[in-house]
Length: 91
View 1 (tube, rainbow, N blue to C red):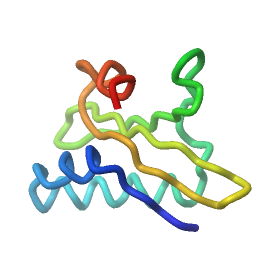
View 2 (cartoon, rainbow, N blue to C red):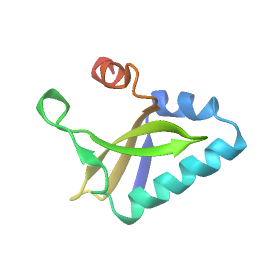
View 3 (cartoon, one colour):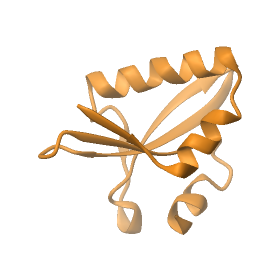
């Protein structure tokens, strides 16, 4: 499976410290094992799946899209719920 990252996702990862990155890696491994684990969104965000997990007891959302025919996982956005969907619509 090919895993791609958007510029916005890379910038969010840069702000994490080492133990937070480990938790993020575990979440990504979970998604790679089962790309349909995240909740499929509807409407104008129908391309988006969101996987919710905790980093330091804070709920974190990982937005991604999965193209089954191309076997491609694109990591789009990472952050807390606040303004998460608004920021994805902008990009």
